[in-house]
Image 1 (cartoon, rainbow, N blue to C red):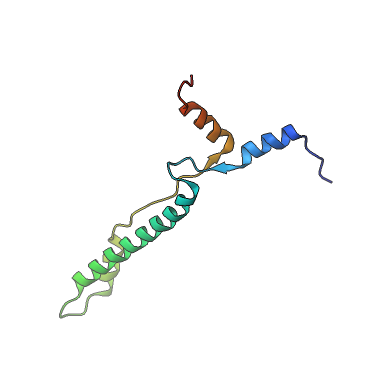
Image 2 (cartoon, helix red, strand yellow):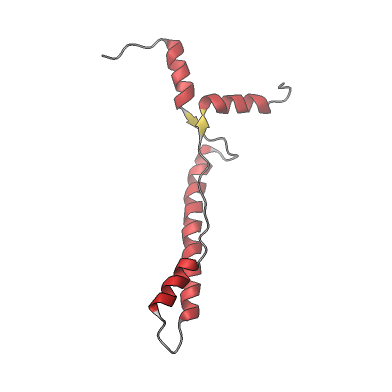
Length: 102
């Protein structure tokens, strides 16, 4: 059976486990921005692959190995969401940004 936690233990656990987005976006804007960034990465990669393949097409059928190497050589943008920080770190960061903080 679980032992009951004191309110102080619950608060400390909450500060450690709860996460917050500390990037300059609001949490609602971040949800949209993450999806749009992922979409942008995939679309730009598909466009680059399409451009490589259209350059290889011509009067003669392209060599399959040349096509495969051209597709593999296309640059793929890399984007990852910055991980959220714990509520404890987020509050400390917010306090340090306040005017008059030491």
